[in-house]
Length: 209
Ligand code: CO
Image 1: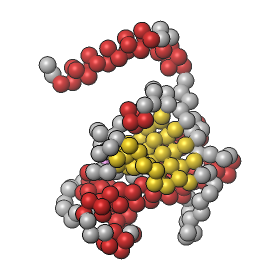
Image 2: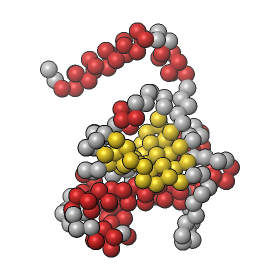
Image 3: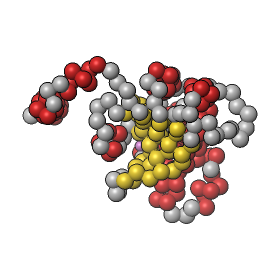
């Protein structure tokens, strides 16, 4: 059987299962969405937001890219963020990285990956910023894990600098920002950095992006 056909068959099975449990399920689902969470995660197939948090359709607004980055020129990310914060008024924004992240791993090398070099550069800048601390870690896996964590913390701070988040904090006591790392060896999520609404100031003067 063609691989993709399995997905379509599974979809049919899933839809009928849902209807069996609740005949009004899709009628309700189609009406509106009021997710409490925006999830910014890695595109890695092993870190599906809803699956690892046991969430349902309608629970999480999701954006994923290579290595869960918040890049200030990324119009895709910024559009998702603006819609989530200003229209959906999500209460929490989660940046979820993961150990064994191929994007982070690639950024730790000097290999030429073609176009993706330009994306990896953003991660390399995180590496460079924390170079001294990272260099002190002799164990390669430990250093890799640390960069995954530092990268998530950095992206949380990038979020806090956006005019979208700053404006929201001027008006209300949310969204709260949460930096998480999914431990792919255990299946568990580790909290790396939490920032409550309004409780963050940039150490340097910055203009919002
Ligand atoms: Co990854």
